[in-house]
Amino acid sequence: MEDLYTNQNISPYMKAVFQTFKKNLVVVLNASESDYTNGPVEGMNRMIKQIQRTAFGFRNYHHMISRIKLRQMRTKPMKKTELKVA
Image 1 (cartoon, rainbow, N blue to C red):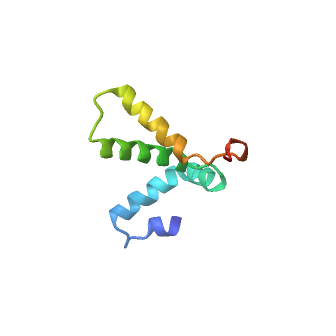
Image 2: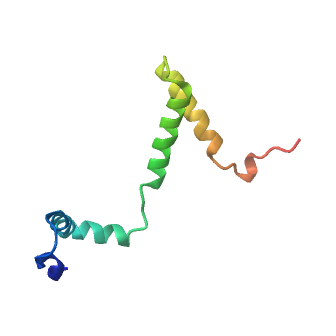
Image 3: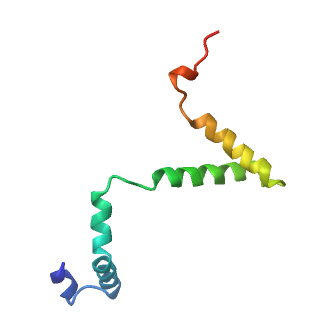
């Protein structure tokens, strides 16, 4: 990486990328070794934004929270003990 950074033919934008990568190298390595991800949180944010879009806004904050909770319950898989057979 040092060879690429010291090369004279590289644009200043690419040098800025290398500097940022070099500055955050420890964080990047930790993220690549970890099994954790922010995917579930991003999915929840997307779901909330989608609910707000389809409702064209909510007049009441409590109605919005109730709608989010209902949608969240609908997307959770049910356990076998929760299934009811008629």
